[in-house]
Every structure is written in structure tokens, then in C-alpha cells.
Image (cartoon, rainbow, N blue to C red):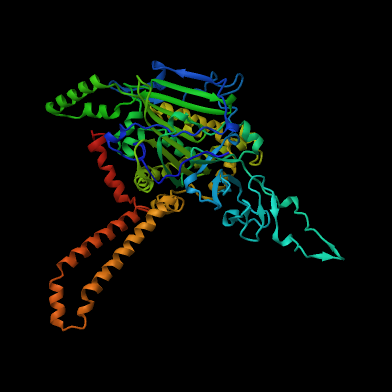
Length: 622
């Protein structure tokens, strides 16, 4: 029961939402690589209730206009009131959403070595996962019941079981049952009183906890909320039509010291891309006062167990066009721009830019032709909820073009560095405020931190009381923040670890840039293709030095015993040798520079340099 996810190492450059690709590259046709969901997980999204807002006045943010003077007005956006039209009758919105009833992405199949146990973490609980020679993926809690050692430090036996490296206990990865304790196995010749004695029975306390696992569309998914019976009726992982399964893909991964809800909110916020990344391509997904969302669809799925949010807007420049209209441009450039606009209007119309957030961990971005319905670009984001203040960012782009994965990884690193530290500075304020609000509500209602059922019923207001979200695009973000406020108290282990971290002073200050943007621990240590690139860079550097030494020995070795005049004469005639040395030096330097791309790089000086691009390319100082 596993998908057929390919494990290629050279695919297309990641979609423009990940790297600042050129305009021509963003026009490449891109589609989704699709693998059919496993038959035992197939679901029909029947009975889905939907609230649809078309492109009329209702698509603009809810605003109050406050006059500050004769010529001044301030727009203050309020969070939308929870809608009951898309919730189960008699229940408030999101009331039936259960984090323990979902599958979670944790690692790309291509980063999972055959018969090698690997640790992953979901909701602050460590799991060990492995792909066996039988083609199965197995997973269980990363905890040996003997003395608590990590099973991920052990091995996979020939029979496909997890074996602890400490004392050799073995566990069935499907059931969690302890199948062997070497110290309790008798030899075949062991006898007492002339009778052969069997080995003692393994105690039930020796058994551990297995979790359902599957490989779907090249991703390893775990179901930590219960056993197989519960997993069979839970909403399945996101699936895509088989018509896209011929498309090629590239995948990326990066661990981040950023809370996973913050990361998902950031992915769904195209406004930030113009300034944090200085990328005009983000403007395709923004909404504006002149071009609001054409549609805004909030829906509960699977009888309220799931929730998704879809938006659709004209895929064209909006904020950039406003900036251009405000800049002082000469008449010649204005005429050229007018001609370009007229030419474009005659040949094509702007496609739709759609954003689809599927709670709790998935986002899809794509552009759709208005006439043919053809998808011209598609990028998929998967966020593993590692724990409070931690996340694993994974993404794949689907395209007919190709590019090596290791190249995409360091391009993506440069891209993510631009806003990851901003998220870290944001995080300390949000999480400390969330912890403060939790303590206040628990004290007011007399709830103990171990009273899980009462905690699950708490409705937070942390984000709606903390954020000011007046932009038209913020309508999308405000709805997602409303979802976090309503549901995060139901998230496994969140209350416990949030309060512990707050007590420890973890939110008192932002970690250093070197820690937050450490590419080695966040990508190099977990991505096989990045590791291969670094190994090859080091080999090139070593080979260059060795070759240079050989050239010296070959050229001057025979002249060492000669007279000094002979040696001097040889050196004078060695211009070709110097040229070879120069080539080797350049090759070695390039290899070293490429190797450095997989380690900390984005200094404060680089940030300052990036910020200087804003008034030149995005928004002019006024």
C-alpha cells in the first residue's frame, strides 16, 4: 500500500513563489504530478457545505472608516464574524475540527534511505520511520520500552523490524509489538531435567506504539492520532487528478525554528513577497482596492472534520501598478508601457491566480487560464507541525522542465533566508501573547493544564487582538488567523509545551541570525541531494590540489638535480603551467563557493543590500 513517487535528482527550478525566476520561466506550463490515493483511503467529499462570496462588495474587507481630518481617512479592518452557514447545523464554525484525525507529512520519500530508521517529529512527539526492502513504510514512537533509548539510533532487521541499538530489542513496525528480546532467548540445546524449556514469554509492557504510515505522491505521511481503524475513516492526504501524473517534479525541504501556524500564514500572505523578497511575481496573488478577490470560498469538509479556504483573483500586477502610476515617468516610457498593455490585451487575458489552504498543513498555489481552464503554474506546500516554535517546510513544483534538486535547494535557501528571520522576530510576540492569554483564561475558568477536554473548548483571541490586517489581501490571512484562534487549543501537546517554553524564557528574545538561518542543520543534514553536492564540491577541491601537485612534480621533478641555471630556465618557459594552475584555482574556488551555499550565509549586510532594492523596484519612497 504505497505510492509510486519518483525519486529523481534533476527536475525543474522551483516555481516563482519559491525562487525569483524570470518572467519567461513563470510562463512555462506547470501541472501537478498525481498519484492515485490508496484504495483504502479513497474518500468522496460528499455533503460538503460551502459559503461562496463572488466578486461583489462582499469580497472587500470589512472596514470601518474613521475620519482624522478633512483630507485624511484611516481604514481599520476587523476580523470577519464566524460564519455558521458553512458549519454543521447547531455548531459554531470549526467546532468539529480535530487535529488528531488527520494525516501529516513528515519527510520526502527520496530523503528516506532504504532500511535506515529515521527520526521525525510531529506535535513534539518523536517517531521513527523506515522504508523496508518489502516496499513498505513503517513507523512507531521513537522510544524503546526497555530503557527509553531512541529506536532511530538502531537498525532494520532482515525481517523488517526496528531493532534498538542499546540492548537489541526488536519491534514490529506495524503493530508495535516487541517480537524479540535477545537476553530472553534460550539456546536450542538448553535443557533442564532432560526436558527442553522454551524461552520466557515477552511481557506485554515491552510492546510499544506503532502509527499508520503511507507513501503518497512521493511524501511519507503519518497518522499519529490513533490506530489503523481510525486512519481508514479519516480524511486522506491531499490527492490530485491522474491527468497530471506525467509531469516532472522537484522537491525541497528545510527545517525551521518557526511555529508551524506562523509559517503557514506566511505562505498564504502574498503581500509580504514584494517587500521581504523584493519579488514582483508575488503581486500576481495579491488583492487590491481596485482588484479584490473574485471569489472567496470557506468550506468545512468531511462532515466538519476538515476545513479549506480558496481564493481567486486576477493574476496581474496590482501593487506594482499603483506604484508605477505614482512614480514620475517620462512621456516616452509611458507611451511604451501603453503600447505594451494594448498589445497584451489583444493577445491574451490575465489568468486566475488561486490559493487553496487545506487545513491543517497544506497550501496550493496555481494560475488557471480563464478560457481553457488550463493550469499554467502550480506549487504545493506541505508543512510538518514539528512542535511549538518548530516546523518542517516542504514544497514541490510540477513542470515539464528539469533542474537538479541540489541547485534548487541553495536557490531556495537564499529565498527563504529573506523572511525566515522576520518570522522568528514575529514569533516571540505571538507565542508569549498566546501563553499569556491561555493562563488568563485557565485561571478565570478554573481549568488545570491536564484537563484536556476543557482546554479543547477554549476559544482564543490572541491573533485577532494582536494583528492589524487592513489590506484587501489580509481578508485571506484574517480568516486563517481566526481558524488558528479557534482550534489551536485542540492541537496535541500544544498547551503543555507552550506554557513550558514560556516559563523557560524562550520567548524573551529572538535567537541570533546564525541560529535561525543555519542551513546545515535545517537542510544539509536532512537532504540527500544537498549532502551529495557538498561531497562532490569537496572532491573537486581535493582533486584540484592533487592535480596541481602532480603538475609541479612532472614539470620540475627531472630538473631538481640539475644546475640552478637549468631550473631557472625551466621556470621561465612554464607559462602554460601557470595557466593550468589558474584554471585549477578557479575550479577549486567555485567548488568552495558552492559548498558555502549550504551553510549560514545571510548576514545583516546582505539584508541591508536587499532592502535597498525596495524603493528601486517595488515601492518608491515618498
